[in-house]
Image (cartoon, one colour):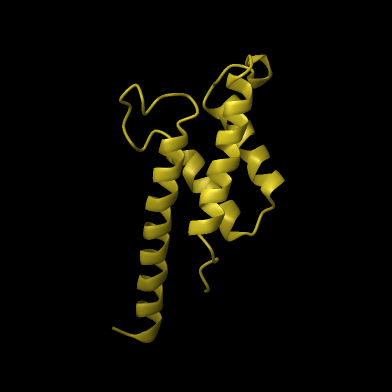
Length: 113
C-alpha cells in the first residue's frame, strides 16, 4: 500500500471510529425519544455528522449548542423547545451540555490531510 493510500485509509478509519463514538453519544442523548421508541440507530445520523464536523472544525461550545438546537427544532421537527416545562427544560439543556462535553472529551483532533 502506498503512503498516500495508507494515509487515506487511516483518515477513513479515524472518521469511522469517531463517528461511532459520536453516534453513541447522540443516541444516548436521544432528544426526540426516537431511539427509546426503537427507531433504527442511524435515526440521528444527520445530526451526528454535523456534530462531528463541528468538533473537527473546533467550533465553540455555543456554536455546537446552537447547531443541536437548530437541528432538533428544524430538521427533526421537535416542538418549540421554549415551551418545555420545568424540570424537563433544565434537564434537556443539561443533557445538551453533557453531549457536548462527551464529544469534546472523546473526539479530540481534527484529522490531518
